[in-house]
Length: 367
Image (cartoon, rainbow, N blue to C red; front, side):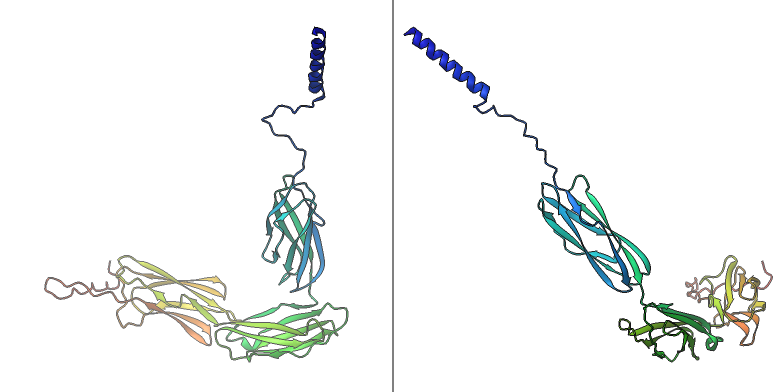
């Protein structure tokens, strides 16, 4: 009996040892989580740079930047930022599962661009290896018919309106020649003549002003029909900036409202916008006590007149005070600039109940 019990004990001990060695029993719980070898989300673009090639001016072109989540966790696109307002991004998938493919639609509006263009789109995501990806679009803006300048500006004076002209070049970049019709204007202030420089390929539009034109700005448009199927009409804007022959700045000399307790200095600029040189002489103010000095800043073009008002000076109400400058211009033999001073407010009543009169101006030469 003892022998049998000893054998049973040995068998039980061997079974227990076998379970421990073979690991058939579960290990004790651990406080440290298991470490994984996953790569996480990974963004991969099929083509990070796209060249549109030749883009017609004014055309809007589109392209889809296709990307794949090459990782083993959810990819999140948190933002798409374009480098300027001419480039916009459409709706894109905010989340993408591993192995799936998505796209970021991009549109570029060529607008008034010319020549080579290069724009960027910055994509932000939760890919730890590249949280930002910079995509690029490029191309060449091509104008099938070039109009240079698109806005024809003429700077004229009231004496040279009839002589003002400017030239607009029209160049055909199509392979085949085109025809261009005579211009039509919507404004009586302008006239134009179309000349052919190279048949079917290059033209000139000669634009001129038609008097009379008021001082200020005048605007008109010319339309020309072409045989080009994609550019059937050309529109050219003409702008005339009409200035007076002579300008004075400021147009009037404004003195302080109060009686001058100290000497006061003011200056006036006289500019010649005409074609002939201007000569000025004998600047003077038609009231007592004001000294004047004149300097020729640009010979025949720009003059500065400095006026020095003495202490105590005051323009008498109703008095027509002016700066006079003699000129060699036949239309303006004398240039006049008003001297203005607002009347002083009524004085407070004195002890007698009557208003205290203002102090009289100092006589010439008084200290």
